[in-house]
Amino acid sequence: MTDPLFPPIEPYRRGMLPVDDIHTLYWEECGNPDGQPVLFLHGGPGGGLSPRHRCFFDPDHYRIVLFDQRGAGKSTPLGEYRNNTTPLLIDDIERIREMLGIEQWLLFGGSWGSTLALAYGQAHPQRCLGFVLRGIFLCTREEIDWFLNGIRWFYPDVHAQFVASIPPEERGDLLQAFAKRLFSEDPEVYMPAARSWSRYEGSCLFLRPDPGAIADFSSDVVSLGIGRLEAHYFLHDGFFSDDQLIRNVDRIRHLPAVLVQGRYDVVCPPSAAFRLHAAWPEAKLHVVDDAGHSGYEPGIARLLVGATEQFKTKGSFD
Image (cartoon, rainbow, N blue to C red; front, side, top):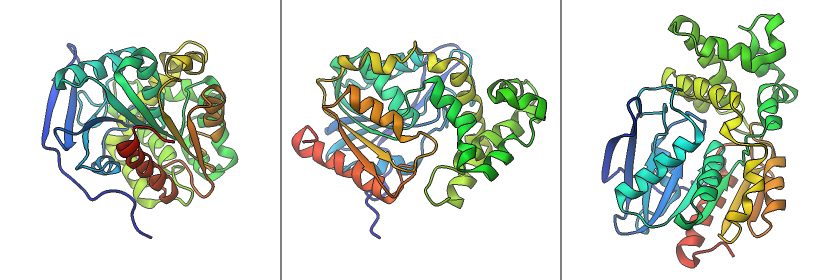
């Protein structure tokens, strides 16, 4: 099967941006320096960038901006949860936009990247050209509980590995049990917990489990960012008020959007995408019947690239 992604490219510019006394962000630009700006928002929280993230966009047309969010990837310190909230991430995006002299851009994000894209768009709709969103996550308590507990109905073996290090008497509240370990100062305590958390997620990304994804999510760099920051954000309901992203969707309903959702996405189940579409019927919803969560599932990747190609020529998704 032909890979729908564009060939690998390298950044033409990159740098480190200090945003406060603790955090410094890694950022990069790829593609056409004079092209249409698009911002890629990675998942997690804490997932960080991959070179393949550059490849959803025609590099001859798009000015592709990517950055590692606070505590993720090449941003420093890795796994740092202090001064790490959704409003601060939104401020970081604005700081990057202003630094690069960009007036407006297309927002592209999957999983937590879809969450952050919605939150940024609702805070700064005048800066957005549109949205390409995948694996919708609204960061509600129901979705957080599903991630921690509900996945076991589909992956009982993976879930059993996830909770194996947690004493049975603490498994009634897995988020608190993991938080106690993840936020320890002792790497002998927090690293095993981070690996368990991240490997759990990586094992459930694809309709057919992908050994490469599992290995990547089991690495220390990815594990520390994913484990610590997902737990941190989940403990605070993503730093959102109740159902905030649905309640405020009117702020962006006038903007073009496409939603791509895997039918068998167990990490971010389809119900969130359907809820968002019900509140935002102008958005185009595509459900991929033979896909899970990952943006690299063939059907999902084709639709994501198709959306960026359609926006390139039409400025919409009609």
